[in-house]
Structure formats: C-alpha cells, structure tokens
Length: 178
Image (cartoon, rainbow, N blue to C red; front, side, top):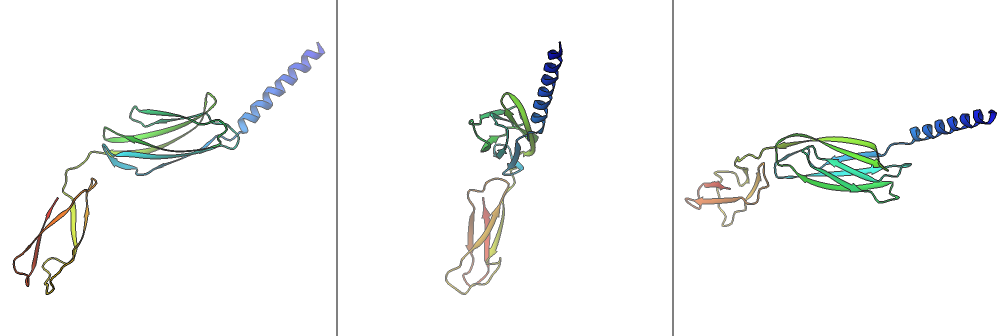
C-alpha cells in the first residue's frame, strides 16, 4: 500500500509539472497587416500574415474573411516562422472582421483579428486638375507642355484633355474627357 501512495503522488506531480510546462509555453505570435483597411467591392483585400513561435510547432492556419469565406493553409513541419500573403475579394459592402487562427497539433493555440471596410463603388467623375500651364495663360511660344493630376475612387485608366485654341496668341481653353 505504501507504494500506491508514492506512485499516486509521483503521478500527480508529473501531471502538475506537465500542465505547468504547457501553461508556460508561449503561444505563437501572429501579426496581421492589411494593404488597405478600406476598399471597394470587387477590389482585392491583401492580407499579410507573419506567425512566429519559439517553442510550439505550428501545424495549420485558418483565415476567416468575415463574409462566410474561409481559407486553410498547412504549415510545414519544423517551421517556427511562417509568412504568407493572401488575397480575397468581397462581394458585399460593410465592415468585416478577419480572424486568423493558428493550430498547434489539432488544438487552436493562437488567434488574431483585424477589420476591413468594404465600400460600394461610386460613379463620380474623376477629379482632374491642370497643374501647368494655368487656365487662361498667355503663350508666345510654338510648343506648350501640359502637366495634370487625375484622381478618382476607382483605378483611373485613361484621362484625355481636349484643347481648343481660338487664337494662338490668346488665352488657352480646355475641357476634360474621362
């Protein structure tokens, strides 16, 4: 009987020690970076994920994009640093929480979240600003160089200026075409 008490005590100490070792292991560190935290529908969200762990071997990564879509990636055995960049296209506007979960074996061992805002596209005309020459400028030369800036809420593919000269020695008039 004396041995049973010692064995139970040793078993309890072993379980307690294992529990304390597991409790002191650092969970993997997850860092998330969105290329842009506010985009339009049909634009791709680009999420960079960096996961590091000094003590625990990671097995897989799950990304929940917050719109019902999920992605699962395997982490190769022996990796204590894992980097990936993933893209996702949203079909609805709104605010979405992106969740990244890391698994160590079959257990989830770390989670990190970030948010993204998805906007409806607008059909506004782009903003075009003639930088030089200034509107109604006088010209005495034969050649004129133009500089302009054009911005919009979509990717601007083309911007054309239409120039009309009433008299080459007089004022310059211009209009914008998108």
